Length: 119
Image (tube, rainbow, N blue to C red; front, side, top):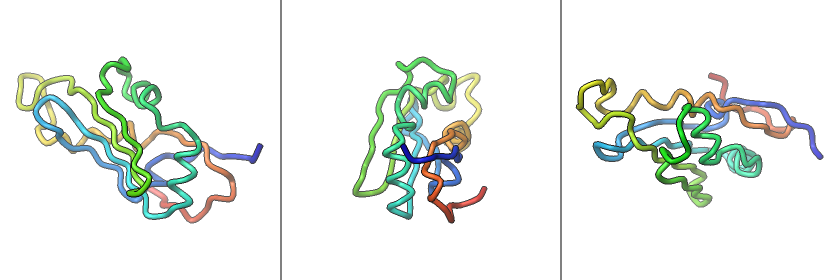
């Protein structure tokens, strides 16, 4: 088994973002600009609905969809919003500030993976 080290998803992906997916859902995206980085994350199995739910401290039922898109070197996760857009208690109308737990997920990657983004 090859040696690995833990690296934050935000250090591996070129883009990690969140945005609205309608008034009741949020979408998280991780987009990669290099095949080796995408492949390392994909092969690790660390990005899963269960692990994303754990990172957000929510029940797995909150994850309404999870897609891995190899041709785009991307992962896309959709969550049910804790509060509907613009409702009482909602604090991020555009859903653009919800990506930090996703970005901070630790991914085991081979030690020979280098030159990743440092954030």
